[in-house]
Image (cartoon, rainbow, N blue to C red; front, side):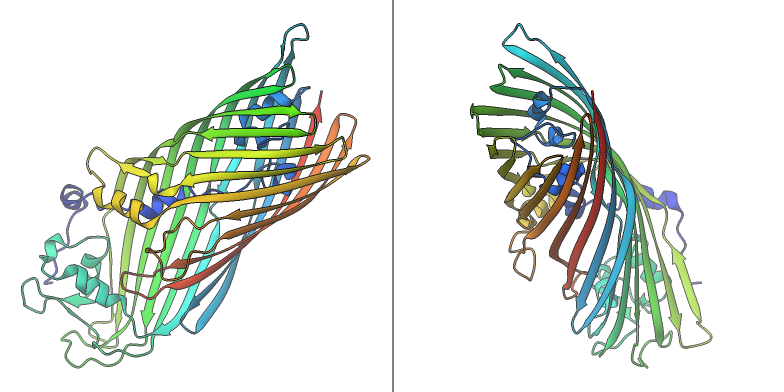
Length: 483
């Protein structure tokens, strides 16, 4: 055979062939509003309120609002629906997951003789993001990924081609030098029409956080809190791309290509740490003011990935040829953005409350780093592709005896800058509703959250944008006991 098969060791020396890029930075910093059923029912608008196992992860000063000990447990069910639009074709897919959303324990110590009259401590677990989703793109166009492989390969010796992409195209005869040096030709005509594309992406995993919090209440006027959070990442993605419907190319020595299938598999695990500071002030009996600061999260992340290519020819002598990449792996550090939250709440006696808050995050401030690579280009892309956003959340709760009725609205600006996407950036909208029941020391809450957003996805470099409309519906149930 004219093709040379390389060992994994050779490629590990020649390149760390980074899977890490600006996409990773956003994936682990663009989080969801997930928490207890009460917290979720108010769309996460809880910064000035406190007294909830999830609210203390937003503003640890809310821990000092507790007057009793508490244990709680929350389950969540999430259904993610994606609709893809590629040129004149569209396809819908959905994925459902069931998981533990939140649990925790609160311990409150009373100091009735001091102005610092309460100290509280909390240990909580919270799901930050659910990665589970399926994305299916089907459609026809004049675009071909073969041209992307060709452009990236030109001028490079085949021994030095990227073993996770261009070399696979070369070794399965999708592209070839045809006895030339560093000049590649593709197995298709330049004027292909109505090519068929099929891209199936399966994602799974989660981000979660275990937090330890402490707080104090000064004369029931000022509440301050501090929290240390330990975050975990578990993410998997299988991306399978298929292209077929090629016209006859009599000039390609290896015959006519029937189809090719290019698959990429990525596995990620990681851990991070951050801290949070916050205060809540009660200047008037009916008014609460809150503010919180979340530090950057410092992640240590490990990834492994591999790719494969299968090329089928109409010529029986060629048949089907396949190849698989070496096993790639790498580790790196990621700093995700800090955030600030400020809020105002109106308390209507024991009847109800309204909370409004503003959250600011600069997604362009994320940074990648590693001992073996400087990530200059990737960090430049982060600064260019993403931007600072201002998010607004509003929530209300009204009590009628033992029952409470809740509603919330969240408006999240797109993290994408206008120069990184074809469409205008669109907001993510979160609507929520819920009901709660309190009886003596026990409580039971449930909530429904609906989130909707539009984003763009590019199947390969040079392809037109696929418009992705994502809707998520979450059903959340919490139970707890105060003692």
